[in-house]
Amino acid sequence: MKIDFANLDLAYKEHQNSFDEAIAEVINTSSFIMGSQVSLLEDKLARFTGVEHAITCSNGTDALLLAMMALGIKPGDEVITTPFTFIATAETIAFLGAKPIFVDIDESTYNIDAAKLEEKITARTKAIISVSLYGQIADMDALELVASKFSIPIIEDGAQSFGATYRGKKSGNVSLIGTTSFFPAKPLGCFGDGGAVFTNDNELAEKMSSMRVHGQSKRYHHKYIGMGGRLDTIQAAILNVKIGHYENDIRRRQDVAKHYTEMLKGNSNLILPFIANESTSVWAQYSIRVKKRDLVQSKLKEVGIPTAVHYPKPMHLQECFSYLNHRIGDFPISEMVSNEIMSLPMNPYITQKEQQYISNELIKITSK
Ligand SMILES: *Cc1c(COP(=O)(O)O)cnc(C)c1O
Image (cartoon, rainbow, N blue to C red):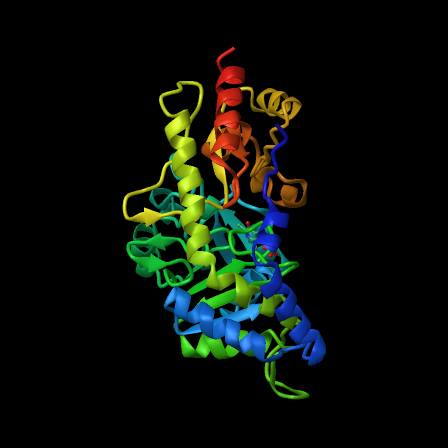
């Protein structure tokens, strides 16, 4: 059996006519930049998440930049985040000249550990970025309890969690600013790059919306230092189709995850994903932990099963952050998890038969 990790072709084919029509409309009207589909999408995103303002942008990395630029993050500031994330979370902090300060993760959810937050807060701490890893939001109430004591704003990097909930609230609506990504492999993906920021704060919304278009207040009048960070109209048109089916996609991802867990549970060689009470995940990844991960991965590959590692090297050990002078042992949970973590094929289109095959092979390989 040959299994596809993301089945992006099936995602297109399932609604091919709607996608083709939506794309053709943008081309036929030449409304390539900030066409009506962009504001339509922003209305839909705001309604979906329950936030006041949803502002689309070029990708999930620029979304993080916009959030921090609107908060005025500048050289000399410190921004706290997790070392167990995709590079964009930490890279954007450094890009703005601020210093990334890491706090280790919780061993069960792999999200930033609120219990270790306070000891890292200094007079220079200007923001905290929590990452909703693999599609599950961090313990925001516990983070907020610490952050509010020092009046430090929280940004949720929701690149992997659009549609997830925490205590009844949707990702994007659980902190002062939320961000997301529409990169094709994310749970809600477009056919290229895309992203968005979310906030209930009118002033921050005005800033981020202006900064996305070169900080302009009106054409050729620039109030802020901004960026060229718009979302293409074609991508907005694609997302307008996709978001209509997204609740159904989430349900299917959750069914796939449930099925994996049923088939793999009770196996002492595997640590399965943990979803906290009062949280739902959109399963950007179904990531398990195994010993001898690299060997297991290559054996699975031999039998046609693709896997991925999110992520093999934590931020504090990346070459680009060597100037922070971290060493092995600084964030032991992140280091342990990065050596053991492995993501199984996860998408709404994977069949039970494929899942059965993956689970059987995985159990066979790991029990040897
Ligand atoms: C994908 C991702 C990003 C960046 O999104 P892009 O759209 O690829 O720029 C940021 N943070 C996390 C946690 C991600 O997974």
